[in-house]
Image (cartoon, each protein chain N blue to C red):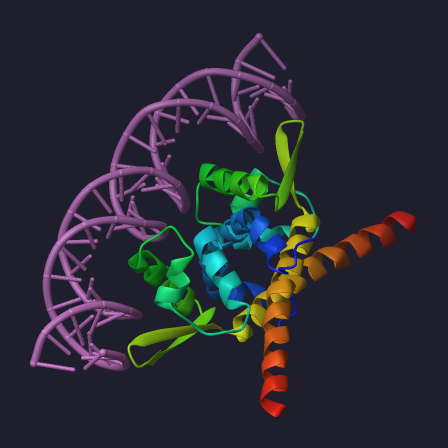
Length: 115
Length: 115
DNA sequence: ATGAATAGCAACTTCATGGTTGCATTTATC
DNA sequence: GATAAATGCAACCATGAAGTTGCTATTCAT
């Protein structure tokens, strides 16, 4: 184990940046939102409510998938997409670790000032 | 209050996408990591450990700042940057709400199947 | 007051991203 | 088997993002 608590974070930060980037587009975020209801949806379905072409949505889904946010499975002539909750868990723990670092440093500062 | 639990999420999703996008670059993520130790740092300091020019880092910091992730204050001839923990809190709650939606839908599905 | 450190501004290049259109492919339906 | 639905693939365009270089402006120290 490294004595630097940030080492692990920085090691995994490239993959994490990919996940953040995948969510850093309002169209993709809305797709994630649509899928967060839990039902699997086809590309055509996901396109319906949006002012973009099917191909644009398809590209976005591919980006989400290669970031691990979403996973797909072909069934018959349609390709069904679903959220990958594991990616969200990892994201959540990453954010929590950063804010945890921050909180810890604030606590140290507070202790130092009050000493 | 809307009857759709996702309505609020989709309303705020544009600003949220901005925050995700700000974190969706490995350089910026490493800056956030460097600042998560809690000490304020100047642009020159933040540039030291990275293989980029000061101007590049400066641009990245500006992006982080306009997304609300970071805040800066000029002191003398240096510009000191610090994490804005509020942005991380909002991000965390957003991710939790999405995965909460997902978990709830899984619970409904489970209840339906077992009925 | 001069020199070095810190930063800002602006122009420029390069390349990735978001989006489109057109066509081919697979699968379901009548 | 012909037609419609759902998707994939490829080429293309426009724009923005990441990074550089060059120059200017403050601020600190000697």
